[in-house]
Image (cartoon, rainbow, N blue to C red):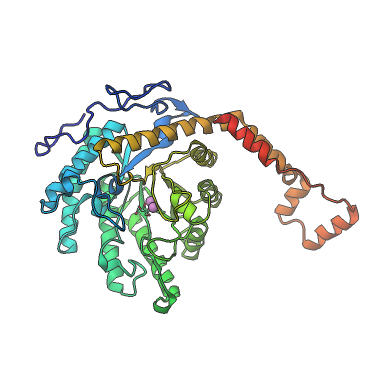
Length: 450
Ligand code: XLS
Ligand code: NI
Ligand code: NI
């Protein structure tokens, strides 16, 4: 464990020993309440250590900042650094110490943050930046001591009232400039902390009604904003990927970064398709009317896959419930698509997930993350079997084999006109024979890997 700052003497969590891999037979007991049944960081899976395949990250906002509020009720967690009237900088330092305590207990290799998660907003941007830098220094020290790394940083461009009408898409260019200044500072901090990526989630880049919105202007503003971020990334030599996180709605009714397909169209319209990738969140995919694996497969097909916000929505609730993942087949299908596309590269699995507001014990944070990490590890082993066995891939290849033949290739290479094709069909007079899609057999096959 790391050396702890002298002003935070009391340990926050109920356990002191980091979780270990205990094996599939592990059952929690009073003596050892937490352990991994599947997450074995050094185990080789498809040629890589499990830890490097999964690249788990703990997010700062849901785990440490969120107080348990919902639309009808206030704080439920009452963490010691949430207390009203405390010194906000001392509280931010305490929060950071607890964060690193959790990362180490879990053996989580990465974390993610918004600027406003780690340090309080000051009276001016200058003061906010200074606060951010001070806490940034503490975080840098803890990263050095513990080896925990930064998966991505991001700027909160949605909580403050100045952003109520959007950040880059605000009708006021002064707000655009403020957002740019904030992103510059967080991008630079992310770079200095060795972050693997930088994320842009367009929290309020959208609108409620066209009666007060010039949609065409707002899209142009957003495009210019993204170009500025990319220009600055190159100027400072940041090697990580810039990622946009699609979400169809919430908080605004129409978000411009609706889903992977619309983000790709937007990137192409602004010449950014080779500069920016996507951070795909399970719950956001669902809200957009897609499956998680659809969004992943599409991002790979379009060459813009970046990273994952790993969580889960609710079948019955139509909003971003951000629950910890808990379904083996769902995560296995997602990981199968990730691996088929070449793996996570600079991305990771960021738990953009929060406790239910009644889960008020500090150790519920351990339970939630450890369970989710174990589930993902188990799902990775399923995906390994799916790939290793190869039957799914064989059946898929067989289904499309016509396209590998001479005629299929000629069509795709542009060597056939519409008239050529019509003449060929008339000449041969052969009726194409429908072939079963075999979905049920494939679903049965999937179940054999679970
Ligand atoms: C909100 C988003 C947000 C991003 C980071 O729905 O998921 O948490 O991940 O700004
Ligand atoms: Ni997210
Ligand atoms: Ni979300």
